[in-house]
Length: 441
Image (cartoon, rainbow, N blue to C red; front, side, top):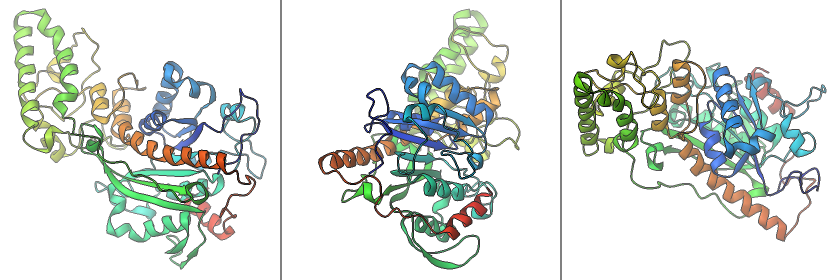
């Protein structure tokens, strides 16, 4: 099991708290889900300044995030520069608030969960699928952090493309680094035996967001590894579908009515036009429920800073949105209840249907309604479109939390020495050096 807390002060850290650190946290999709699953975040690391502002703003304002308000560091910067613990050159850890909770620096083996949605472009079907040869590949950095921290559990999320046959050797390498085995090193090309970090890769499977109440087709590959001394004789119970899919009609009906309401209330020609457009959307969206994919939306595409403004994806995605009564050519201006916009003809009264607001896109992604996004409209939409749906993260997080809690209860009944982690010997220097080279640190 993990090391005992630094102090026995009842106001200090508790062995019952499931701590986590998340890299590439984005606007908080995965963080929200893990928080719901019972994890308490010690740090959220994100390079995009607007997404980092989103994380800080919500942690500061939302009552349910009071623990993180006191103990979580939101770190805006490159994950390659992130220091979760002091290093050999005496550079201080980036965990400031967290250290106050822990009573000192984070120690190896003490963290509950290391999670991250590492960048998807290297493996995305929409990109060139350069994999390990893509400079945005952060799997090496994730492996380096696993080696340094030796958390009880690891969770890595990526696009389903990483499960393609062309990346089989790379997946084998990642698994070998975690649990040991024979694999080809992606940088040197040399096939060798890796000792591993002492984990069991419990699952590396694709989960479909629509199976978890998210009104969107969004398959994501999720890897979960548990430290072998923590897992013991138990196993991870992989999450299964929670029920029937939620349609776009069900998800957006209330917000669409609210968007058209001020124009309908105005009376006259405005009211006639608004009623016509609303009825048209209601008819199209409701009809889509019994046609294809239960009226579930296509995958939201966040895009990147290199590619123009916000829209709902390529031509095929726009066509799918059209069947749902939504125009995919852009994103509407933010709607405040009861407010009339000067851009209504663009946003609401198109023949092809209304455009989604950022808030409605967030509903499609599974964000809670009280989660607010920072930055301009395009920056906000990109945060939403690139997120990991919170309900999916919650389902996986609960499965991991069950294993960790069961292990802690087991260890309370049969205490074991906490100074040595079974199977957790220091990895070969060559392996660590390779990670540093690949992660460019």
